[in-house]
Length: 414
Ligand SMILES: *Cc1c(COP(=O)(O)O)cnc(C)c1O
Image (cartoon, rainbow, N blue to C red; front, top):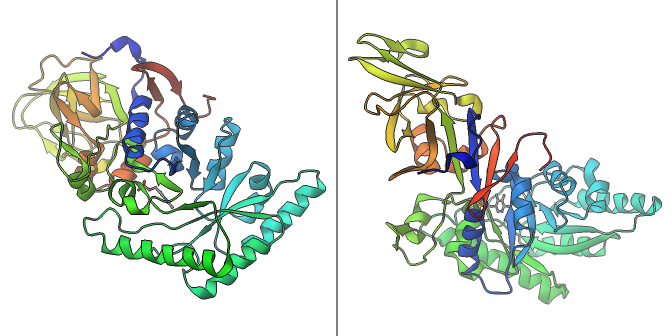
């Protein structure tokens, strides 16, 4: 039975994020790393929808953590404003208007364009005029096959590396690449990206004599399945939140019914649950339609419950007529179309369901569980995307050491 009193009973909808699960998922990944490999916790897109700030605060003292990765300059600044003092790397391109701020706040910028080097150097001089003497710490991005951002791992690009090392005001702290297909069962593509990266590192070291302290390439899938790619650091994203990078990785690493099923044994715990409460229960008769478009028409007498969650909260409209919620430990199928803020579910066979009853949209209720992977599949949404799309208008509630710890709402300082 849930401890009803540990959560706000007046919330129409809220996400419960278990910080203990996030720690445990990181521990699981860390267990497969060599002690010298540091972890970069990826908290982009507001921590994959889980809340970047509370998670970063929780993990700052995690043993073996190097720091955090964000996707944008704004995300990195929000972390600094919240008091996060660990290193932060911005994984995407940062526009020049942010360079002074990045240097001042010691936020690491990903670099792959020559103009960035020049502009960072300028920003550094500007800061010096204001009495701030800091270097721009950069990580050079190598494109080994994504064809997204990065310089090519070819000998002619050693000029770029030279320029990075020779530009006044710049400190080359890291170098990294990103796998396009590490989450597939066949690692041929990931292996060839890895060897392209390693060859380029060798060129840098042997032809130029540069030592770059932080070399990293692994995402969650590679952490779990490509131990040879763990260098000075790894970037842990989706798996930290207890989500699987892909079906293939889950099959090869996951536990089936609590027992190891594949070669690598990783037990991930989903960190996020999503709860709501029934606000209206009513009976309808045969021939009555439910929701917009009248897509669902009852064939018999039914009891239906209205649940105050909808696509405005990131509960996808694609679940119309397909999804289900858990009520009193039983499955309640979605009836008709999901609206922006509400939807209806069938509680004909759940007589205990009443106004005020807790509804589990994602998570566990008794023996039943709904995962983000399942809802993603039903609604045609990738699990990463499902997490990121969860609406900002619902509060996030945090569980730590097994009990309710705090509430985070937009605009509220944690
Ligand atoms: C998002 C991202 C990651 C994390 O990937 P996961 O699959 O979530 O572990 C790592 N590196 C880069 C460059 C990314 O953009």
